[in-house]
Image 1 (tube, rainbow, N blue to C red):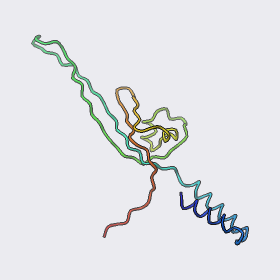
Image 2 (image 1 turned 180 degrees about the vertical axis):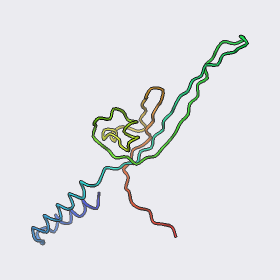
Image 3 (image 1 turned 135 degrees about the vertical axis):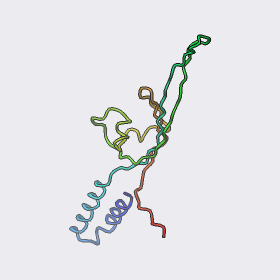
Image 4 (image 1 turned 30 degrees about the vertical axis):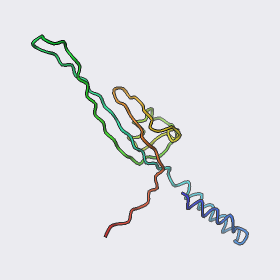
Length: 136
């Protein structure tokens, strides 16, 4: 996205030396390229699930007790920042490769509860989808 802005700045600096039609066409194409680029971010999050089970002593010596277990899954995903629409919760959006633009302004880590699950968003950072060079 920065390279499109750089091209626009160069054209603005030298527009007096170029024909008006060329300047207009180049700036229009730059704007189209800028608009076509999605706002991609790298999101790292952890979903913590809980599971509780009641254990009873069948011999009657001890009172029943609960055994609580936590399991966590950490993922890093590439998501697109979107405006709110028909999706109602964070997990639905993230599972569909999206995150609300308002989340970009939150301080991280951010913790949310969804029923018996806890979601921790560790970070949301801009993603530059450049292809990696192949190793030979």
